[in-house]
Each structure stands twice: as C-alpha cells, then as structure tokens.
Length: 96
Image (cartoon, rainbow, N blue to C red):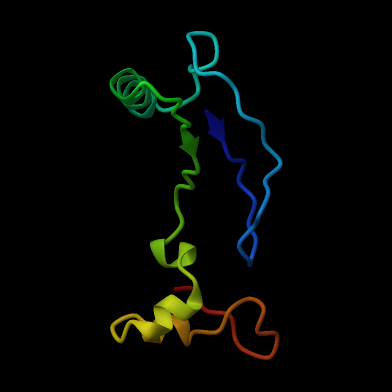
C-alpha cells in the first residue's frame, strides 16, 4: 500500500516521492479500512498481489483533477476550461 503525499503540481507526474509498504496490522492504522479489507479480499480471491493507492485530497473540486483539454472537449464543462488559472499572470484570479 502507498499513501501519496499532498503536492500541488500543474502537470501529470511520472514519479512520486513516496514508498510502498506491506499492508499489515502494524502499518494499516492510518490507511483506509475499506480499501485494506477490499484489497485483502481481492488478493485472496484472485491469488495475485494487490496494490492499494491512497491519493485522497479532500476539499478539492473534481475538475481540478481533470486535464483542461478534457474539460474543453465536453460542452457542458467547457466554461471551466476557459477560466483563467493562477498561471495566467495577466488575468484576474477566479476559482472554479
């Protein structure tokens, strides 16, 4: 299992600065109980290793996790892709 640290970045990342650890009674305490039981049951049924990844980031909008190009491609969400971002230095800052 692995819990990905919160780190705001603007581009998809190929690597993270975290390490995997074996899921067990001594390590699972701060992990999702539902995820750990799901992973255990899945591993027992399939007889293959199962990796559990916790990337929860409470308080962020779902749109923040979607590429702007995907938002722009969906007519009902295009307006969100058109909003200025913090990187648009010459534009007023607005949140989604």
